[in-house]
Image (cartoon, rainbow, N blue to C red):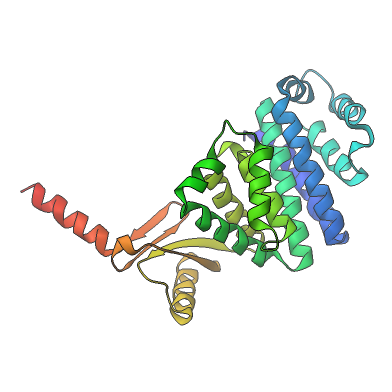
Length: 273
């Protein structure tokens, strides 16, 4: 987002955080669901996005337009947050869409936080991403941009039934819709990171040939926390193809100490002789 859009989003996010501190988890989750539904509407209606972000119209007029369109289809809480968003200044219509979707996600995460379930939601999102990645056929089906989101969401609903919290299921649907313009797997990864960020943590994606013991994972997380000055959550992926050692990625930082990487480096060095 450009500067003006970031300021407008920050104002709405501040309002959300104040609201979420006082409301119960169920109410905040309902608000998040409504915000995500409005972002879906904006995604389908480019003319509406342009009208609601038009700098030639006063912010109050744009908020009034949205209220007239939505009427009683959303609750007062979501309506208030959307009013703050739409009244702001937007550098581009797409940035209003991005902000609405992000605000809905943050509301859903805030509801999980209020319920004491945020850590579990984070883990459920990560584990589901691993499950999908391990099944190429399932991955292709869920990542197919041509297939309707509703149809793919029905499939994920079946897969997650009784195995994940309702907030997790809704966030998976957000990823299916292309959260922030990302692929399905990319959207899931970003949602995991946002959940961790709300808990004031970073995520370390660790790839190993065999699962780390609980104590090994704890020591690794502690060492990374010392390095980054912020608590780090370790997410393991087991891949026998790496042969041994481990690869650790935190944000854009990648530490690849796998045997596979060392063999590749050795082959490349020999090839240059």
